[in-house]
Length: 341
Ligand code: SER
Image (cartoon, rainbow, N blue to C red):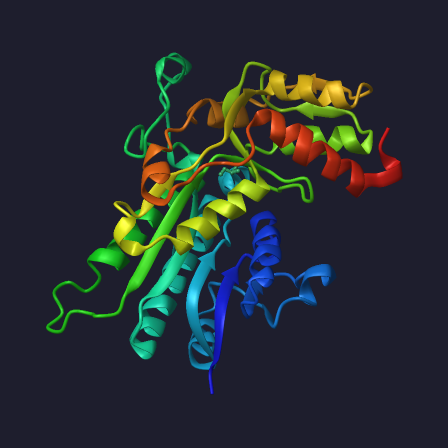
């Protein structure tokens, strides 16, 4: 008999770690997939782990035959900075990988005779604002504005949002027998994410988490954007809550397949000030990298998340003060223990 599971791809990434911890509390049986072995502290809680590639279609077929997948959290992706070094590889992972998972969801839906939920983290990178003056003049940006991303990752995320909408609403619409059981794609556009437990790799919003973690480790940090650089952020517990809350929302309450979510917007200098107040010996210098600066400058300063608030009662638990004082600093201090200066 096939095993009933929730599938998480990219399980070894930052969001994956938080999501696994939250989902194991619910008693769900998890099937986790990543290119690397899941780290030991998490593996003991997870029923099924597979080391494999979302581009491996034989593996996708095997998953389809061995498991009954109710929900897919498709987290695997190459982030924005990494993607600019290998745009075509990024496209394969971010787009073809997503199509493979959508296909798996469609297969599962027909086999099971039930809709399969597909939860997809999209990103502030789906936006592209032409210049700083326009960014500064813009109010909080809604889902349909400035959809001209300047990175491969942003293009990939935006396109995958459309694929999700297509698979949910229009898949094989000319077939003689329309599909009854489909994919139910739901996506959040995340701002930059900051976790107290892990440091991201290959993103362009990484300066914020890197600055906090470097100070906690007693290491000097060279920030790769200007002090006045501003973008929206969210701490990991809120990001995980957003995914779970959207997954749980009744379908008929949803008016879209894509929702902005956000918590607080801060400049790099404001983050550095918070860090210095907590770690007085923190050494933070600004050495802007023109390429990465341009990317963050193209992202909105603020996101409008009213649709998520209205449709599925989204509301972050951590504003800037709580994020740093109640979550990041205490958890990071605990994590690095004696090594903190
Ligand atoms: N954190 C991501 C990145 O920087 C944006 O979603 O690539």
